[in-house]
Amino acid sequence: PLAGALLLDLLSSEASAVVLSICKEFKQKLLSLRPTCRRVTKISEEIMRPLSLPLVLWIFDLPEAPQTEAVLRASAAAAADPELFDKLAASVPVCAVDPLQEGGEWSEHEIRCASNLLALCDGALSGGKSGM
Image (cartoon, rainbow, N blue to C red; front, side, top):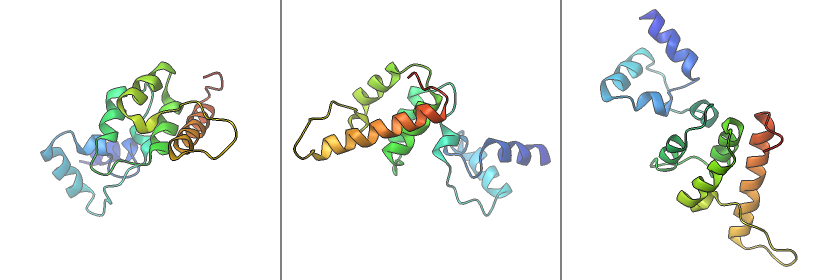
């Protein structure tokens, strides 16, 4: 039992959504070991190297998906292939990074794209991928 609790502590600071989704019995055992668990996790603990596009898509399909920028930041830190973000944007349009117009007011979509671009750049730099 001690080794299992230690493993859970090493896996995530709180209850990992990925770990909790293994199976109902595992989730019940985890919550019995950690009764004060807030069932909240950090995106940076869910998305790790190597980046798994199916995992990122699964995260966006959660009933309460996290902020797009947080997912993009963590994904960029873990990604080895920038083309994954084209595939992600094709599946999840809110992740798009389209060209921005010069001059005039930006549309809501362009503001979202700029925010996404900043999140990707921040994540790439924090992941040591300055050439991405």
